[in-house]
Every structure is written in C-alpha cells, then in structure tokens.
Image 1 (cartoon, rainbow, N blue to C red):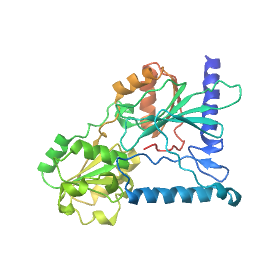
Image 2: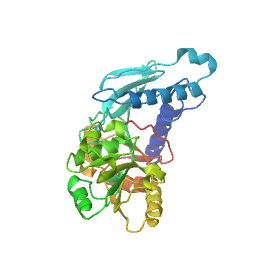
Image 3: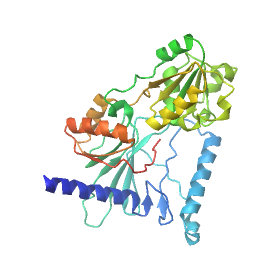
Image 4: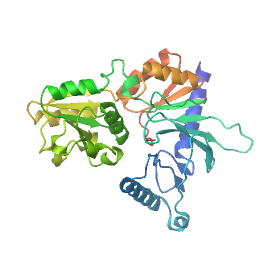
Length: 327
C-alpha cells in the first residue's frame, strides 16, 4: 500500500514539474519561463474588440515574462485544431474539445524525451460540458465544479425558473464566474426573457442587442462574480440575485451586498450545460479510468474527492494550485 502511495506521489511531482517547471508555463507566468500558454478560444466570427484586448494582454504578459534579449522572438500565435498535436519545449500538447462554447478545450500533455514512453500522459481540464471528448490518459486533471463535486448541488438554472422569478416582480441579477458561463446561461434562456450583460460579457453574446431596445428594462442582468461591488449596479433594482456556481467567498460577498438592498433574495443555482456526476463518471471511464489530480475550491474538492474515490478512482488533491482557464 505504501509503495502505491509513493508511486502516486512521484507521479504527481512529475505532473507538477510538467506544469510549472518546464520552459512552458501552463499554470504560472514568471521571469524564469521562455514560453507560456494562453487560450484565446474560437468564435463563429471574429469580434475585433475582445480579440484586440486579448492580444494586448498576451503581449503585455510576454513582455513582462521575457528577458530583453528574448523579446526578439516575440510572439507566436498558433491556430490549433482539436485532435492535432503540437510541441512546445519538452512537451507534446494537443487540444481536445471540452464541450464548452467559444472553443472550450482540454489540453492533452505528455513529456517528449528521447527514448521515453511519453508518460505520464495528462488530460488537463477546467470545466466540462456533456459533449466533452474523452481521451485515454494516465492522469485526469480536474477542477472541482459544484455541479458534480457537491453531494447536494444547487438546482440547475433554466428558463422556466428564471421566468417564474421575473414574474414574481422585479429584475433578476445573475452572477456568473466567466464569459463562458454567461454564454451558457444566455443560451439556456433563449429569447423567452429580455437580457442585459456586463460589458465584459457583451461581446460573447452577439444577439444581445437585438433582444430588447432599452437595456435598463431587461428582466435579467448577467454580471461577473468579481464585479458585484461596481457602482453601475447601484442605479438598478433587483428582486433576486442568483449565484451561479459561486464558491463560499463569493457567496458571502453577495450576502453583504444584498443586506444593503432591502427585499433582495439571494439564491444558488448550477450552471447549465455542465457535467453532473453521472456524466463525469461516464467520461472518466471513457478516458480509461485514469488517476485524478483534483484542484479547486477546498470545500467542493473535499466532497468531490469522497465521491470520486467511492466510484473507484485514485485521487490526489492539490487545492492550492493556480490553473489556466481553458475557456
């Protein structure tokens, strides 16, 4: 038993080395790296605003990440098709569909060493949709998501529930963690309710402007978790604030915000079009029942680990790690 635990610990160290100690920085950007990875995603049509903003972000990260003599090689953007491998340094990488919109991807990773067997083969994920493409691997890197990690997850957010909340009176504030979650919520609502969004999300909701004429009259407002203190919210009134996939620290901040606005009710909801336990178990089995390196919110990860071990998975937890969001 101790030998098995030692073997798992050694493999986890190998994976952490692949992620943070090679020339390619997947998790962290710092001055010792000569390359780093970012994910732009894909859209049906190129929208200049967010593309230019992301390009500027990539360039600024690169400039701060490279020594002056290294900047002559700046910068390369690679269009990668799902399923096609490419190499960076001593790693062989490949993008795999994660089932999320906007080009959401998982990242296949394996070391490229002379005479080596390419192990451990890691499938690096962020969040997964029901149509995620499985890939046989040695390790599956998962980030705990409340839809599958929690024993009693919040109810799934849907158009019917939002319509009921809107009919009860007042507008509904939808607090979401990312632009991808905002897009998934918007897709689930369809055209049944008027919808407005934070400027950060607007470029990813191309039909938003056609849904209604006066944005202030929208029944629903999509807003980022980290912008609940924005002054632009003060001129709006809400009857309900819906927390979508919110960790406890975000929930506490939302409760403080609601306490200053009499009559606002705070409720939790699960993000639509994400894997639940049944779907994740099928995905894990389709990947060949790999070992799992679990990250994310400590409370979610603790519950998720117990469930993963109950279905027979070997799990190692690393909740303190940073992680690239492959949106």
